[in-house]
Image (cartoon, rainbow, N blue to C red; front, side, top):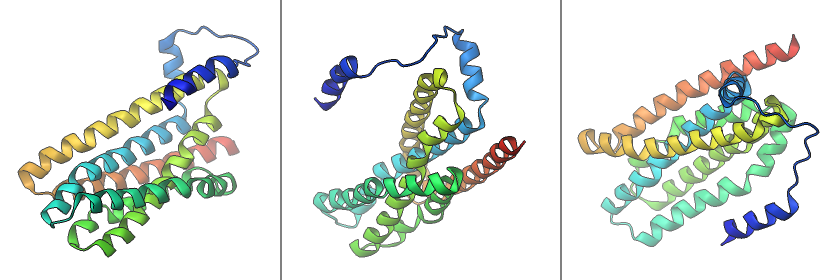
Length: 221
């Protein structure tokens, strides 16, 4: 209902304020957007984040069920993570305005890489709550910087395509995480996918950091 109402409001209140219209070839426009380092870092960040969260959301409730947890407990745990994920984003946005977009994103990916497998070594609610709060905070460090980073690097006339592509990468990560996690958990045990996820996130954080260095060097030159 909210999505439908917002769609109606957008037809009335959202106006295109661009001075000149550009009808570029889609392939050329897509190539121009993908070459932007800001776009590359943003897509990598959002894809990896939701690869990890998608895997966690599917597999950890199964682990909790094995620990004889009630469904209410599962919902409360992920609800707590969601609260910290949402509430902390404005503070991260302000931080990124001062320190740049890359530092919070790399920090968030690195934190999740470090602790994504840790909840599977506990069987009680209190350690889970603490770990999920940290995951929620770290996730906000990534998501709050993605769209400002795109806006920093992509021209106004290309931003619709850029945000659409970023959302597509988010969806791919959200699909692949549960899919690959389920396959690995079935064949190798429930912890194995998260060790793999941790390694992928760590490598991704390093790539985002290197990409950020290239952005800084380009801006200085």
